[in-house]
Image (cartoon, rainbow, N blue to C red; front, side, top):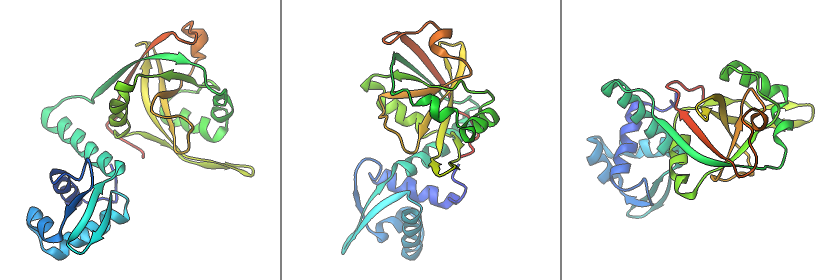
Length: 232
C-alpha cells in the first residue's frame, strides 16, 4: 500500500473515479468535488494538489475547472484498497490470475541481468529461491492484456536498483507465480524494459526449458497469486 497516501485521499480518488476520471479526462470544479466529499473547497483543492504531486492524478487547470485523469499509479492504489477490503469483509483469499501463453525466444540478455549479485541476492531474500541465471519469455494473447494490467496493479515485491561498477541497474517489480502448477517462479517487470504487455519475462530456480522440456511455440500455464503484503 502507498504509505504516504492518507485514507482521506482514497475517498477523493474514489469520488474522481465516480465522476468519470478513471477512463478519460473529466472536467471537475473544486465546488463539485467539495460537495462530493462533504468538505470545503479549500480542502478539495488541497487534495487535488497532493494527488497531482504524488503522481496519482494528472490535471489541466481551466477557468471553469480542471481536466483530471487518475493515473495508472492512482488506479493501482485504489485496486490495492479494493483487494484489502475484499479480504477483510468477504474473508476470501488473494485473487488468482491464470494465463495460457506460449514460449518464445528473447534477446538472451536475461542471464546477464539475473546473474548480477544486486538482483540475485534480492530475489533469494524476498522471493525465497536462488534464480537460474536466465529468463523464460512467454507470449500472451491481446485479450489478456487488460487482465495483466490488473495483475500489475496488485501488490508486488520490489527489487531495488543498484550500481555495479560504473553501470546503474534499475528497480524491478516481482509477482510470484507457478508454471504448469508445478514450478515456482516470478514475473519480472523492470522499470526500464523493451517488453510490452504481450511478453512475460519469468525467473525461476531451475532452467525451465530443460526442466519442462520446452521449445518455442509450446503452450504453458502461468498462475499468479497476488501477495497480501507488498514491499513496494
